[in-house]
Amino acid sequence: MLSVKQNLSKSFLRFFPILFLLIFFVMPILLWIFLNQNLFSIHSIIHPPFFKQFWVTGLIALITAVSSVVLSYPVALLWWVNKKTKWSVTIVFLVFVPIILGLLTRNYAWISILSYTPFQYSFEAVILVMLYIFIPFAFFILIQGFGNISNNTLEAAKIMGANIFESYGKVIFPQTLRHINIALFFVFANSLCYYITPAMIGGGKYDMIGNIVWKYVDKGLFAEASNISLTFIFYVLTIFTAVLFFIFRRRKNNLSR
Amino acid sequence: MKRLLYLFAVVQLIVGCHGNQSNKSTKITVVSYGGGSYHQSHVDAFIEPYKKLTGINIDPLVWNAEYGKLKTMVENKQVPWDVVEVTDAQFIRGKSENLFEKLTLLPDTSNFIKGTVNEYGVANVYWTTVLAYNINSFPNRKPSTWKDFWNVKDFPGKRALYDDPRGNLEFALIADGVSKDSLYPLDINRAFNKLDEIKPYIKVWWKDGTQPVQLLNDKSVDLTSAWNGRIFSLGSANTQIEFSWNGAVSELDWWVIPRGSNNIETASRFIVFASEPEKMAKQAQIVGYGPVNKTSFTYIPDSIRHQLSTFQKNWDASFVIDSEWWSENENAMMKRWIEWKSK
Image (cartoon, rainbow over all chains, first blue to last red):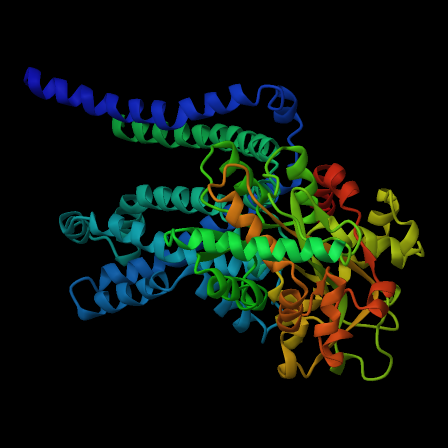
């Protein structure tokens, strides 16, 4: 039985994020659209300017998200297996070090490292450095998921006669699935807005949406910049909402099962 | 008579500043482009001497000529800057968008290159985008024109260009056989078609002036467009890079006072001070860009004089960008440039 007070605080907690979003996200966008009425139109949604760069941006973000989760998953698993030893601290430390270095330092370091390879200023180089930036984030999200696995379930699996692969596939993996989703989502959303790294590492050949917005702002062409951003936000929001809807519906199904 | 006027301006400058000395708290903010050797040239040639002469404190800042930043500042009436250096295209656009204050004082214009003094600002230097290359990549024939830049057979190697349509469209047309005197209005389609030819050989689209020099030194690329001052300021450290003035493009930079500045008087005086031939000569020797005050050349040693954008021989080989054309077409060109690059 919930008391009235608990009920209230619960409804407030539900209401608060919505209020927050309304004030800091929905309102600015509406204001933005209102101020740029003559520029922002259905036309630019149907025929987005820089359609190609939308794809480049999405592709870079998608590759980065999937690869960084795939690559950091085994490391997170290694951390979890060694959870009670000194190794786990070493692993966390090693993953953490690159974050301490500044973004620019990392970019310049990579440019000079890549100069010894045929990949300097290439698409592959962009992906590599994006991965380098985002793997730590994916890792830290994933170890949260591993940390939540309770030993009871593992012991239960062992008692039931599951071998190591079965207990991984049926017990461990499903419990980390949620954090895999979060990591994917986090890395994807963040890498969508990157522009310094692709510009520096890719030799200016792979313009992401952020680069184009920056170019327009740089020239003082605010209206064009905001038009591109708005169209981009429209697409990203549509896709994100669809993805989130899918994830939550599945979770709900899982719960009701 | 002109000379007398000039003298008058100087006297007024000094007297005026003495008047200000009672108010030691006067402080102006001077914002110049870029950083590196270029900013240093402003500090050494203009800012420090002005401080010494007048006792007025100057806060030297650096910006990357982001027009939007200046515009927002003026429109929001939050103007902490007093003197700002803008590009020629920005000067034209800023005048039409009413972003600048009129100067309260102007230098004697008789020795200035035509069109470099205006009631809203005084030009500082002509800076030039040249064709630069690593000498080790071309031991025999050296590339010297934009035709050579486009000629990947006789001049094989990786190339770089500025990530901006400005200048590059002109270079493409020159490479396609258009004379530098009949470029404007630009034949856009022809320029982009010509750029199509060179695109597969461009390894880097560079974004700021330090990049081309570094790219050439590392041999990441063999030839590129580059700002002449960046090569000049390497001085004796430069053992690998040479460049050509043929078909190089020069642009003006202007000193302006943003509308809403609190120190219009002092700012104007600073601008006039920075336009004196000796001061400009000193700057040119640090950075290698061309002073717009022709008298400056008498203060510059021969060895340096011939390396400047406004030295007659270089001036004749290169051309000046049509900023009027660019300020009208920049937006459309930018859009097409981004789309073209990702094609």
